[in-house]
Length: 230
Image (cartoon, rainbow, N blue to C red):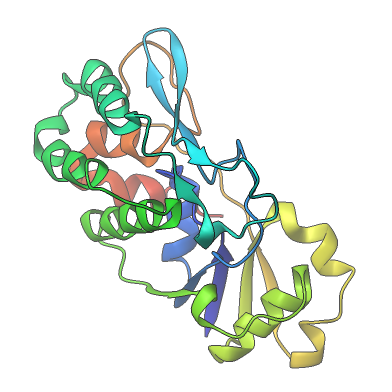
């Protein structure tokens, strides 16, 4: 049983979905502390002027230390209209914009209260259109004890994991811990080489939101994602 664990991010990059597809169970880590101005609330799209940030505004004043699933969107700012306008402006000529934009925009326009409600609903939708069928669970609905490797190992144990597939960035603190060894679980690292695909606006720019791939490559998107596996 292969398991991966990642925090929910806003319109993630393609490597996020590559990791999801490589495992049997994907746990969305929504029960840890929120990090402002992180991927949890923003991501990038490609424009004629280069990468552009799309950021979801959140209410954080006086809420220091709140968990990801507790963070509320600042509904006084009409961010979704701006995001949709930016997507229309930069992707309306893309081959698959007309096919995917109506449903995507309807999700962005919904009256989400919590940031994680928005990010998770979008992640699930992208999985559907990409054809990724990995089982998704949420750490906030599971037993949570400890931090870092101890927490991850405990979550894996609850879904009977035999292998934990981790992003390379977590290697140092995972290898300093015996949390997985004590549970007889293997740790493997997901090394992902970003594939190139057809984009607008000049030379290829990697690490854009999954939106960039979907609008440009449509039904071929999952095949492109798989090209980066190593």
